Image (cartoon, rainbow, N blue to C red):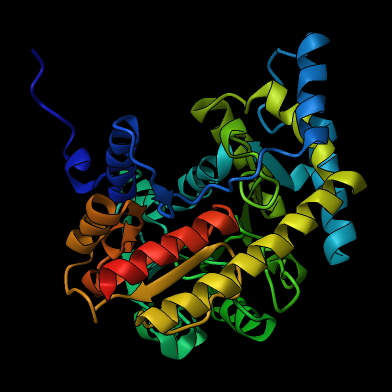
Length: 386
């Protein structure tokens, strides 16, 4: 029996949300009705035009490898989407289609990080990004974010935390778990601050499109030197299809293609053909209706949680999460999450999944379930907490 495990594995923690999900499934198998607010997966089925395009691709035998950078027609479609939605011209050559946004993050970090190079990230933030950096022998540095800046990076953070071994900064807008977004002025200042230091700015736009009170902004409108991560999972509703993309600067096109060849060869061919239908007008209409539904859910859940006594330091402006302070009820968000699941059948995610910035005070609610279930979840919480 091989007992030695690579040391880096010990630095990677499991998703607490997945452990809670597994327990929730056990309870459901026992006949319990669970209200799921722990997983960041839209409850809407993939739009029908995308499904039909995937089925048509399978029936016509489109099951062979595509080029490592992706199906040329899909890269062209993504470029056209940027033109229509943001009014910018992006060469399809700069777009690398990947197995999900995680594949795009892996490509960006593999292209940028040498061993011991640091990459600055927000804390709280999506955990996989810091673990991908560690797998590549880089050094992720979590920067504590506060409600003062709506949990988002500013140029002041760059000034304070940049060092001689800092290579890159990763920001997310909209962000997981806070739903915070970067306004154009802040994003522009970040780009200038990072580029003036010879570094790279990686912008995770996985939740792009799911913005409520303002327009969705892409960093590509401000610089052609940024690395932009995006996904078909969230706004486009294609979670299980595992498809994303990375936009790179011109001088990284060959680098990214070479890495894609060796890391994953190519993204799923049927998924790529299906995604060609994601940008059709009839699909966008469906997606916009869903975005409005998410906003209604956010408004409902936010107001009800505040009445119950949860403190939400910064109103989420995008994605589909509410990051709430639960310290009125518990100083241990993990134990509190477990209690809610076991006692009232409401599943949420503890702050421990998202970093070291006071995680015991916070839990994340995902409004990725129906309004009816959200209402039921609030009623259960009200009964339990009172």
